[in-house]
Amino acid sequence: MVKIKICGLKRLEDIEIVNKYRPDYMGFVFADTKRKVSHELARQLKDKLDPEIISVGVFVDAPKEEITELFENGTIEMAQLHGLESEDYIKDLKAMTDNKLIVIKAIEMSQDTDLLKYDSSNADYLLLDSGKGSGKTFDWRLIRKDLKKDFFLAGGLNKDNITQAIEEFEPYAVDLSSSLEVNGFKNEDKIKEIMEIINE
Ligand SMILES: O=C(O)c1ccccc1N[C@@H]1O[C@H](COP(=O)(O)O)[C@@H](O)[C@H]1O
Image (cartoon, rainbow, N blue to C red):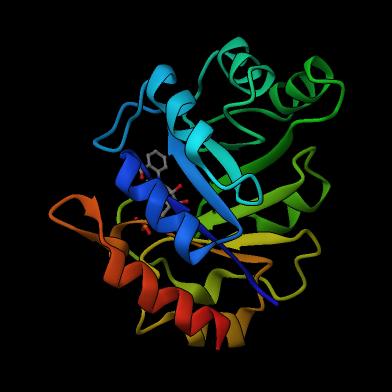
């Protein structure tokens, strides 16, 4: 069954909502955007998170030490890399954590993307996205069905397009943020609705 990640949690209320509806993954954004959380806040929120929900840190070209510190102190279990991180950078992150950190490499999909080259990536998973939490879909015709690496599908997924996306592309996981917000905050009704669709 497809897994689901809900990203951009930043309040205790958000943690209480995901503990109730139980997605597989949740994301803390450490990049400099409207969803950014401090290390201290993320640590406090992680303490309240159901331990069965895997916490993912979202980074854009962060110093490797920032990621490994958050991993070692238990704030994150996986790292989602949304910048121009190289294969050597990913290899270093793995080596610095005795291969324990699970890495997702995000790819901003465009006509120029050579997706199949990422089959040999050092990352554990790929994440196909339109941008960085933009709420917009990319041209799904760019998804190669012969891609071998498991991927998270992200970018503008919502209650109206998620079923088609899952049926047509069979992603390992789907990843949502913008469509689950009202006035910039995660919304319980929207999360409940998407979890019902996923669990159908
Ligand atoms: O959400 C952000 O602020 C963000 C910042 C930097 C990198 C990635 C970010 N979000 C990622 O975007 C997708 C979901 O986006 P959408 O809002 O549903 O279109 C997800 O992978 C987030 O981790």
